[in-house]
Length: 197
Image (cartoon, rainbow, N blue to C red):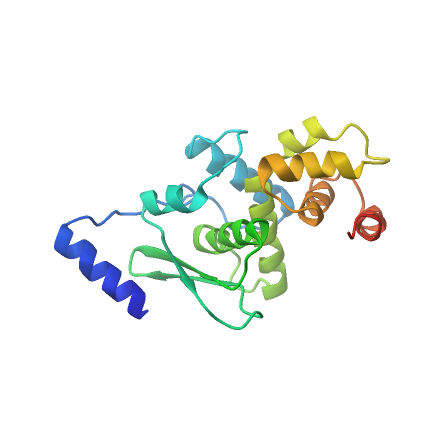
């Protein structure tokens, strides 16, 4: 909060305040995986990413008015997000050096900021939905289906190619395949063991 207060004061002095506009403000509360996929498609379209990789998300979000801060915390802390008045804030742990993980965390926290959920929705389900948005923002259903030639088997090289281009971990790619119904959770666990390295 101290970092944000200093930042906000500086913005006020310089008259550089940016008002963040939520592109999903009229989107209904998330109640199913299909809603998540649709929300990610709308987000990418409104932000003009379409199906291209998002290389510098931090700068992009900061230009829109999202405040992103790094803190040094215990490794069990990954990220946090909140609104301060009309300003969205994302905090990530600087101890995390895995670039793919950091990208994913920022998108996950962004989902918390942008989406509506049922008041009585279970916390674990909300976390899964936010994970799904993060994955869908990184790797849309259309892109994934254009890379995956077979749902029977996929080579480690194919997975590495997707990872390299879109900055999403191999396990997250496999989860995306489950979310868009290319494979079952049973197949995910089989491949997870196979590609654990």
